[in-house]
Length: 219
Length: 219
Image (tube, rainbow over all chains, first blue to last red; front, top):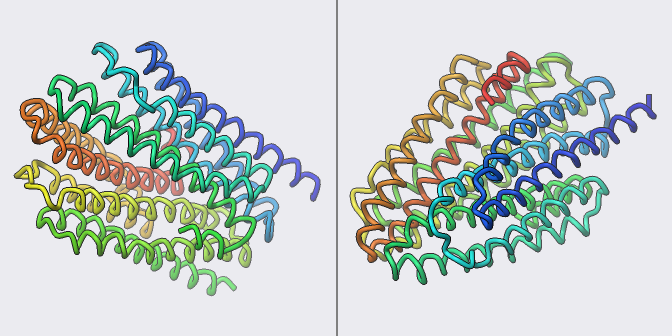
């Protein structure tokens, strides 16, 4: 029994890792589609989302099934319930990549406001935060989770500077930029929300490993 | 044992209902603050959020505790794991009300773009969707959950018309409106995300009561 449970936990970790890889791939591809004004690539991101939605259902079922069959206690119980929460966050992260792809479709036929300011940089930060948040879950690594929580300030600052630049330097000077600047402004927001989800995941990990106090402290 | 579990479930329902009432109150107050350009009211919404964050922790603990002590099966197990997921959604809904309040603070010293177009209407839709989504959980009412899922189209349409009007009728015509229109555009997005969370909750309820097929269908 013990060994089976551990093996199934290992499978669960693998599934969550795989799903988060797909979500990160969607972020990378959607921002690549923005850079290259590649409608087909943006559409690919949108189409790939149903696969991630399916994975969410499968992982949810696995978690509930683990609870029902093994009735795990203490650390193991918390690991599975945290898995349920993380699963939902990853699915939303993938949805936000779809949101970015939809903005890319809106922009694809218009001349780009170059040089996309710091959007590619914010995308890198977002992808790293997601990767590290999931790694901290897999390895129960609180130090790494704390690093993710700390990175959120960088993400907020980047998003702020992107939005300020779009509003003050483009839209407020040249009316013809509005319909191109608004989707970029929303993309910056979508990326920042991805960082928020990564932060939520990291806070859940700290809570899972160390108990109440730490998460409370972060909030 | 049986009766205790049922009583604790009743408590859990009550807590979730109370937390969702606070979240809806935050939405209502933040949009009221927008209408009245009331900075103090906006600040109240921001300050009240720590109470909701605390409730999230308490409810999470109760769910995990219920799983550990009673090891519920079948429908009861799903009710508790759904509670864990819904809890996270309500907390995010309250965060989005805080986001709205922050936009209100940005706008408070500038002349309003009147008549706020359809933002108060979208706020009503959002509050109703949240209320009905939580009711569908409390009553395990799939018909009500389906109604919430159907309402999401109305929310999307309202958000689209608000954003189109702000972009095409204001920002693209009059540069001086940009710094006031952008926060309104973001508020419309925040409200739509609240509707998305309500839809997620409703989909979870349908899944909880009827099993895989229906949620799959909605996705």
